[in-house]
Structure formats: C-alpha cells, structure tokens
Length: 290
Image (cartoon, rainbow, N blue to C red; front, side):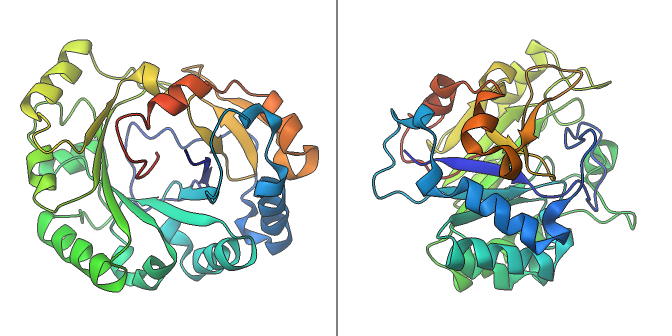
C-alpha cells in the first residue's frame, strides 16, 4: 500500500471542461513561492506520517505526490523545478494527471515520473468541444497525437506507468472509447462518473450504466468509480496547501493550511474514508491514483 497525496497545484488550465471541479474558495497558488512549496513538502514528508495511517503498510514504500490541476503543465519550467525538488531533495515519488495537450512540449518531465495519467473523454471533435475539452484555438487531443505521446513516454522512461482517466458525462455516455484506449497498452484505465458539483448535476444511473456496458473491460485493466467511490476517499490538496474533500456537492470542506497547522492537525480537520481508499487498490497492483 502506498500513501498518495493529490496536489491540485493550480486552477489554471488551457481547457474549459464544463464539469470541472477544480474550483476553490479563498486560496493562493503557492507554486510561485519556493519557500512555501518546500514548507509543504516538509510537512508531507514520510517522517511526519500521521498515526492515523498505522494500518497502512508503508514499509519500503515512498510517499507519492500526484500533481494535478487545473492543468499542471501550464506551469512549464516551474513545475519541473518543483518535481525535481520533490524527488531529489525530499525523496517523494511523483506522478502527474494531465489533459495531455502540453505533454509534447514537456517530455523532459517524464524521466522524473513514475506514473503519467492522461485524461481522455472522447476522440470526437464535436464531443470534446461540447465538453469544453479543447483550447481557445479549437484544438483537441486526437488519437494520433495520443499515440505519439504514449510512444514518446515509453521511449524516454520505459518504467513509467501509463494510465488514462475517462470521465463519463452528459456528452460521452454513449461513446465507445475504452477499447480504443486499450490498444495503446496502458497499465490502467479509470472510468469515473462525473461528480455533481456546483451547478453541474452529474449524470443519471442509466447513462453511467450504459457507458460501462458499451465499454466493457476485456483486458482486466479498467477500474470503475461511481460517485460514492470518490467521495472523501482521496487525500486532496488545493493550490494553497490545504486538504479539501468533496462530501458536499455545493462546497468543499477545507483544512487549515498544512504547513502552518501541521500534518496531524490538518488531517484531523477533514473526513477521509480509509476503507474506500484501500478498496481502490484491492483489485491488484497499485498503479496509480486519481
């Protein structure tokens, strides 16, 4: 079992997905301040693990920081410096969740990552535009670009695990996409049901069920997460260094800033469902998180 922190390092993104839940209240983005970043890493270090995690087997396992957003790659060289510090100075294992559109310009990061997660909801231009999964120049991550990106990752870092995240939403619930993703040989595909948040009401049970039927797992590498599986089951950190949880569809619940209040206190201020967290990795080898 590996302890994984999901740091949503920035709210900035070059896409504008309508269902995006990466919206936070009253925060600053501390990636701009090296001292605050180092303070957060110090607070999250393995030597400061909370007694709340005693039942997890962390022996000889590095703590992993998963960089998410927004789109973390919009930070460019700043992200590279931060990941370099996390791995070389603090001993963390690092991974990333990205929309993939900027990976080609940031391939030097791949050598420092154990997992690259790419979010892919559709290969249709029309569907991606409806979702908002496109740039201002109307560019999407098409299949051909994704193939090249995956091949480049493997050439640079053959040990890097590749996973795909698919969010089932109102525009793609009837699309067959998982079999096409499986042709790229990922270690993991995660199918997530769109979370109701703010003005977005999510999708119906029938729509989610239909997606899973037409995208049946034939390779044994697909994980399905309904809304209940995602609630309070990730250790998520916002851009300012606070834990936050998604138990309320209208508003997040926040801890105090971790590097100010300390890891133990901050953890006690949020609800974290350890049972659901552990269930996420019972299917087999733990390849990646959110």
